[in-house]
Image (cartoon, rainbow, N blue to C red):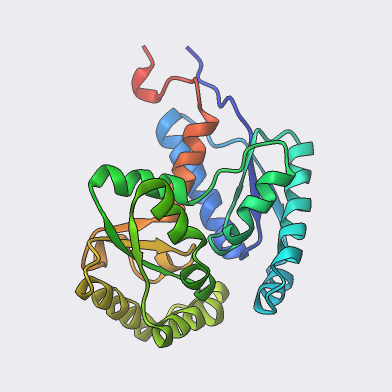
Length: 244
């Protein structure tokens, strides 16, 4: 029996291009694990200019951010994508607005993570990401509302420091040992406050610290998001193990 990908994945990229490259690799690796041979994922990516979106976000112009991403999502829709996904965490602040404006589904990044946390029995987790992700509540509120999981974030000064590391270093491909130590210190602080897992909610942070290096179980929302996309794209197709 020939196994085929049944749905075309639509990727909203460029937020940053480093994170888009990471998503592309993770999705294709997951597809290859499932299908074997020379298979890779069938996907369509629309790459936005991160500088424009970063400036808009810094000025709090989230309506304009939603408009730019929605326009890109409509290009994916017109190109035949069965569903869309943002290859970034912070952009999910406008996920509901984008989802309402397009006809194809938008795969939200919080849902695969929430299912994994719930299945493992976690009830209180620490959240690490950009200042927007940690402060605007769009991810924490969804985890609380849909999965009953309490979310803790670092204090304000630590949130500011982590945001600087992400934007000024990691999105530019810069990885510093001192920033790695600072990130682990933040995780230790969250554990001391009662978190029993760490939700790594930034596409760039895995470049700095591997999940197994955190002081408690680490959940990479990007990897979980990518794997969920492959599951959706292969819906109805038997896995490698199911082939006779």
